Image (tube, rainbow, N blue to C red; front, side, top):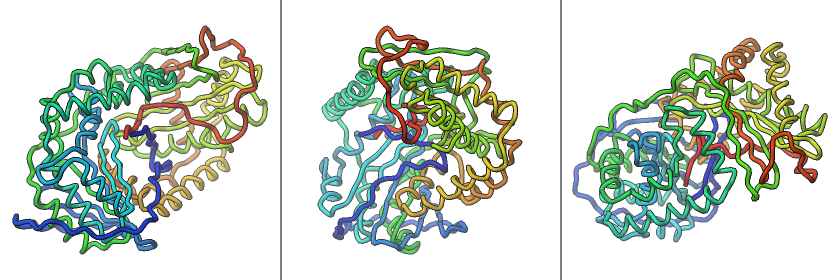
Length: 492
């Protein structure tokens, strides 16, 4: 189980390609009558969706270039939907879904996928939990049968829950508690979000994880793991008729068990303070700094704002051609790494951030001042048409390249539909990026990159200070490296 970062339409976390052949494993016969799909809807990219009578939304993304299919089931629940005091239950339950069902013993699903050379895993974020497999098309019925079965027939008891709880507790200790960067990221998130549940770590707080029990797990399962709270995305060498028939035969027999209701969460109050979080730890060899602001996501932003923030992040510090990288890494050499990012893929407000790490005799204070100067330039003078055009072209190319990965496309559609957007939003995204003007870039910089409402964090060696020089040259050259920031973090 690993951490993955989710950004926006323009920055994708792609799952590895499958090359091994797969064998067909027939599904068991069922006696429950099948249901029919409601009328289809199609996009200009040949993506088709339909909904089963039990509420499950199904999206089909044809890609016949290779005999491979990606099957991803997205539940519309993440850590931000957890009850107070139950942090970590969403990720914990992701683990429990791999246990025994009334139909199959624990581990059989994973073993069948492995036997045919397939790949599988699962991940949990603030806004969704997803399970995926990559197999040959002949094995699609098999994975749909197993996945639909555990949606309905999972068996849990105290021993199973206790054993798996120990697993996730160790996961937290090894990946967060032993990692100064991850510890600081948690504190930063809890400072940036003062009221919204995004302030809680996806993996959970240790003291609350220790209290999770069978009752919590069963309640979570019954409320959220119902077909009307999920989206199935099937991408690859498939056709609509086959997917529809298999979906009706497998998922269509799973009853609608609950109505999770609208995802209404506590929202952020107006923020009027500049906050600083610092951590000095003997395990830190290279100091770094980060500055973050709340910013609207693609779901919560006014028309055009999210697209402008995406392009602002690219111009400011999204690559080796950005202003920050060229000024601090290439020209004056004060930074070993530096950049900017926009996290706009969440259901509620996301964040915008800049970061840097000093090189040679430079200090964190110098790197921070250099980045602040680049932000001030954009706020005061804006950006050029040439900068915007080049950034726009890079973003549009990224969508074209993303279509080369069926798993990447499945992830784009699944995460978008799980965070309040639509297939139409994905179709229209390139046109909305083309519509961004230079004034839009300057406007969002002025509106959201206000220093008096920022959270700045410093990660330093033991007894370190932001203006203290650190021995050694640091890590120079290469692309800008984004720091650990869990604002849209995903735990697998």
